[in-house]
Length: 341
Ligand code: NAD
Ligand code: DAU
Image (cartoon, rainbow, N blue to C red; front, side, top):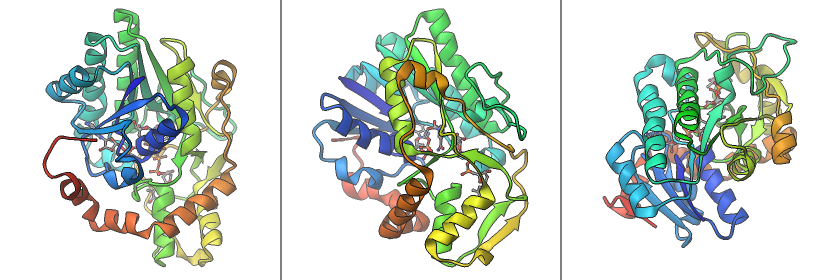
């Protein structure tokens, strides 16, 4: 079973590759990643010599490189994690989000058609549904798309392209939409690793606005399990939501992290709000439970404490990210070649 995973050097992609190598003894994985600032091969150090794993450096929006990787490896399944993923960056500059997330998805869809892949899985997000008010029911798969940030708009555009390739070209594709992930190897620009690392270093925790924005936090391995269940068992053309029935206000998570780390609550600093900041996300996942037999397994307080421990025990990983050293890892390990395995 040959699987092309795009964006496998990022947070969720690297966890997914590790998950899949363990879960599917027949899986051979090609990780296709452009190694942007968010791509870090150090996150895959423990699997890099696995004979069922291969890394190919390349950009999903570059038709030549995409064609080459499909021609050389003939994947049966494609799982597209590759994306610009950080909302704040999309507010500063949206162009790269359109190029990577929209154009990149279109290039992959074209190659999936041309090379007749049997299943395409687009990894999307709850942010395409917009924002909930307190008391609103959670998002379901039929909730209208109301993307509010340029990041969310680019993901919604990609989702619609996937839908169009199913409808028009008969491509066998599914779309997964998940809530906020936490876990090991998350880039420290995101809320939980940023606050954890800042607290460990006795630095302020910059909480946006009133700190009362709500997210439905899910452990990254539960998300990986959901993506793989949808890729294996999902019906072509369908969308599957994943969430954890686990809504937390940001300020309560900040309190909990400081408690776990034994640091003073005075480290929390309210700062200027994110423009257009979505107030609340919550995902209804009854369809995934019913059709894919999927349920989240990791209890939040346990998963968060384990995640904090991971950042405490892996200071080298995040120190290299903060210093920028991680970006020379690929060159040091592999020289300038495009393929490693
Ligand atoms: P990330 O930013 O940690 O990783 C993204 C990866 O994609 C990096 O390795 C980067 O090098 C690669 N990449 C970016 N542009 C590329 C391109 N043009 N070609 C090839 N590779 C490219 O992101 P993440 O948090 O791991 O998210 C992965 C996917 O899951 C994204 O599609 C995101 O929208 C989606 N998602 C994320 C969350 C979350 O909470 N983090 C939740 C739901 C969905
Ligand atoms: O919901 C899924 C999405 O979750 C994914 O699609 C995105 O790729 C991922 O980045 C994430 O988006 P969010 O914007 O929800 O995550 P972020 O970690 O940036 O922020 C989480 C919450 O914390 C949000 O309400 C903003 C707030 N925040 C964030 C940062 C970085 C702060 O208060 N301070 C901060 O410094």
